[in-house]
Image (cartoon, rainbow over all chains, first blue to last red):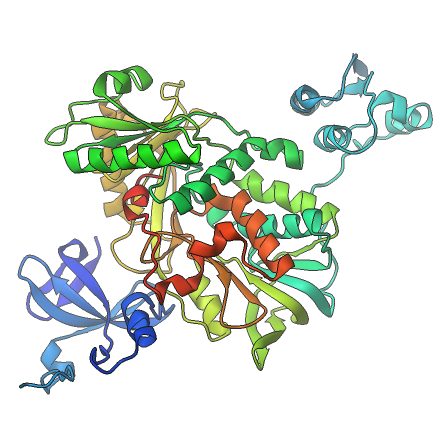
Length: 96
Length: 474
């Protein structure tokens, strides 16, 4: 059994978690061109090495971020969202 | 010393099979010398193939001096399949990165049909050591989009003739494939696949429970909570010996002058302007006219070396094999809801495969959870398997694209060609991909059949969606 350390629930079986892909910045939909938008939607870095990813502990629906090595399958560190993004997300959309 | 002389050995397709029997005899009874009479045919074609398979010369050819020579020799005059080429040359017309089924098929087609012989195939390991020998050897064409059905149907037809074309026995066996539906929604998608196939010359039909019972009498139809409602029967489907596909292509390509360099890892590329000028390898740099990338499992990693980003995410896919048993399943049986497929090899082992791992990874280490799941689901379909031990297990890395279709076509560089994103559907496409990618590189133009599969489709949102026909229904 592989164990992941959840910042909220502590060490849990990895089967309780699902990943939502690499942490990346969404381009602003109103200003980005079609090609760059398609890249954002479909393309991936698919790095063989350390990646920073969104994960979710499904029984508690708790979202967090993990650093993982995609060759050795080691989970190097996990973070709460507030640790890495102290400021609220700016999606580029106007508030109006 | 005893002699066994085989008479009236005519050159036909039958005799290629017979040649294997002779080879078997000669290996089993090494003290008995085998000679063959009546092998009358021109050199080339079946003649050469028989010689290659048996490793023996026909008596007429060998007489009289050859007979004496081999009669006195302690060594059997057999010819090795692979002769390692010397050092890398300084330059090649075409460099193919990846010595799996795809890369070697492209090399063979370029050499045989386009008369381009100055080719090298590079592999960081050994040929056919990657996904060519890690898949579950299901060859089928029951897809859902007309583009895919056209392409895979041709691959299935080519596979049917491949042992003959290459003179290398791939033990192809026309078993048929049965995909199972456990819900109404799946039956609807089956109907659509059957309709599409009708118009594209592939044989598939939706069958009811009674017919399923006739095709696979041992299958448990009333699986708890997910009873089998209907099936999709695809009688064209084949299975075979997968690693011999790489070997067969390699042997024939090498006979035509292609150099296959194993244990030669590509470490980088030199790009000048919009062209790759140099391929850097662990055994030295080489200049190249054209480069074809065919590295299933590492498509993104190699493409990154030339600065190309691909719409690919890589996952491990796990499979396993049980102890051999008496034959009891003829077709390949695949369940959409259980994410499990089972087939029996000619040796009697059950091959059990499933869906990819839940998160991206470049490691081929298996996990107990996935294996337990697979074993559990296989036992739901065939409950009497509970006491059968697992003999071997493994994983391969699959390069999944967002639409579950491959990427074949040009890249943003002028002389760098992609054969990537083969996810869980690469083995079944090998001969057709070899044929058309070779044509594309030779003509410098994308053939019509490959046009839907270029990487550009993701920019135009022109996806070839095969998710339903692919996911865990190999």
